[in-house]
Image 1 (cartoon, each protein chain N blue to C red):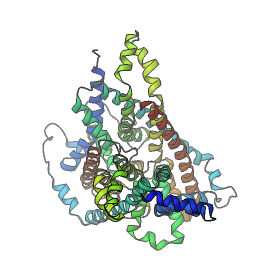
Image 2: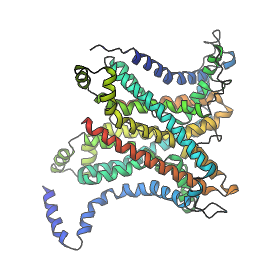
Image 3: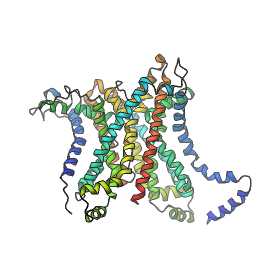
Length: 300
Length: 269
């Protein structure tokens, strides 16, 4: 086989000074890919940090430090609060949906429908989804009107689709199904044998969930929470379409600073907010990937 | 063991309604020409028409945006496959220890939100290669990057599920060169992965708004945002159309991969 021939040649050159090169040579095969990612992802990302470390006009502090004080910090915190709330609600409802789907296992068609639609809905978003909710719960929305017929006036109650609670509802449209998809393998993994064993030992349903079910689901739950958090935190188009320009979300604010750069001289603040976004995303996504590894380990 | 499942049924019913109702509302606004004020039992079935959809899909602005989005989608699929098929096949055949590295690079787009990516693009490239950004097709490589986590995973799952080593050795020992081996032996065996990678990329491009709008490119989502003010009914129809097309692409993908290349992030949000 030609593999052995090559390793013979390799062992010769290993002793030669060119050994390192010979060992690195196979890596040339992924060079085009690495160059592509560097040019179109890493370079722009580094560029964000480079600009973020420069000071804002009329200041000596790097923009990244400026961005974690006063009103700029408040927009980051606002985004985090919004993302956390949609992530918690999405986590709870999405998990319950996964449990419901599994417990109705005999209705196979129902499961396929729910899982199939979740896979679609988890990836709907952006402008079209925002429009669907404007058509539903906007000022002239269909359900706004229907509710007002039965005496519930959303506008008088202070509800606006472009406000905090409105955006939370819209985000739940992709957060819930995403959580369902994340939790399904874990809930499926709670084998009925575990439940029967617990029941045989005299455990009630509540005790089963408390000492068996929830501890086993915890890594997936936490991982799912982080994924949903990251998902909402990085969203831009949906919020922008719902409340064009008016939103305090950090993703929408970034555009504001970069478009106003000639007037305000604050474009570096936009980069600084983007840099902080990347940092938050790195933390959340590494947490998610780490926890996913943990939850996959015991499932095997 | 008999369990009480009533709560599960009610929950799924409620969540199902939450999923369906916004789409129904959008469909009403798309196809019914009755102002909400006048909507009641007597007008419920009046004036339903597909005229608004015909009007908007034949308008010049829509065709301009749609044509650009279609070309971007096809080019992105092509570039995605051109870069990723050789890389993933190479890694699986020759250099399995590089897989973790390629996977890491492919996961990175998840941590750079599109809004951060696009400001990075302008910061890095506006001053160095401005002519590149002025072409609408400059979006293609960035769309390949945004779709990278999905494309890599689809192909990786596909390659993992076949006995690649045996196939390659059989083909090589019968005298086939690498080009023939990849195109006639490997590709047909990972068809599902290739198709799902292509469909996911296509869906990403159709829905992406952030990068396109900040680089001032007129794609379909940008058309939606623009038409919001002057042709509300048209935006509902086109929005619905986009959702249906995306849903079909994702539904088919989910079907052929049996949920294995499960997508873990939202496209175009």
